[in-house]
Image (cartoon, rainbow, N blue to C red; front, side, top):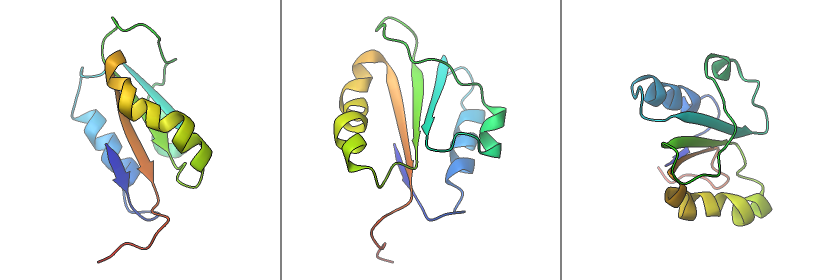
Length: 102
């Protein structure tokens, strides 16, 4: 899932709402962010990413890496394309770098 929106548009609140209203769906949560110390994330437990395909479904959240093309091409695209083989769901939160057509 990709969530795009300008600053203060509610991206974090949307993810928090999804997690709050989807209890017992994900066995673990991982947040990969430039600044993981945002107040909203203080209410969420974060675990280490596992490497075993047989474990239950986990969620990985990438937050605000839209300007880092190297990480997007080398790492994030692998999570989107291959993560499902390891039962990893992925949410990518970002601020659009190009103007949105309205």
